[in-house]
Image 1 (cartoon, rainbow, N blue to C red):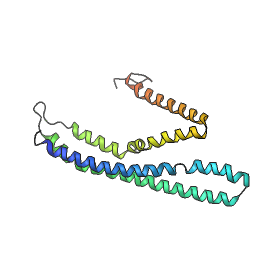
Image 2: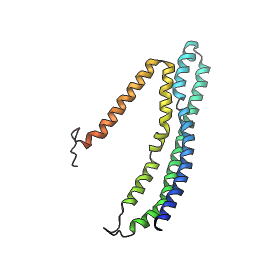
Image 3: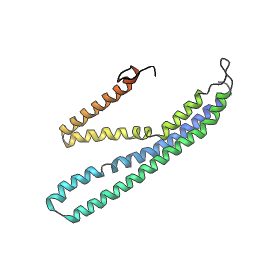
Image 4: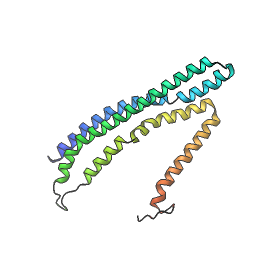
Length: 189
């Protein structure tokens, strides 16, 4: 290896380690978020199971307070998770941008400076700050919830699984559609 790639590799390893710590923290918040996302379905189940048959206003009041507090905590956790993702993206950008920019500005033997690595760093930073990491961390819980549906009732499981298949097929069609000129899109534009 040449000496000019060593600062870039050490910056990448530092950024990767910092991002790993942030992902671990976001995974803990994902667990809490997904548990709190069950507040409304459990609230509705309790309303139909306990409140309506007994006409108990006290039970309704306490269940409503618990659900409202759960949703408030869920909102706070989502906000904290978003701040953690933004800070992780900023740390990644701070650790990697300077060495990548210095490397990109070195004239290449063939065509001069190549600015594409700087664009790549910006794209990675934007992906880290977006909801992409949240969605990836929430995916195992979604699969777990669908599996639990089978325990509740197999028909609900098959209905949810069918909906998942339809959504995946629509997403794949959406990805392939504009690239092949489908859906009235001109692939040249």
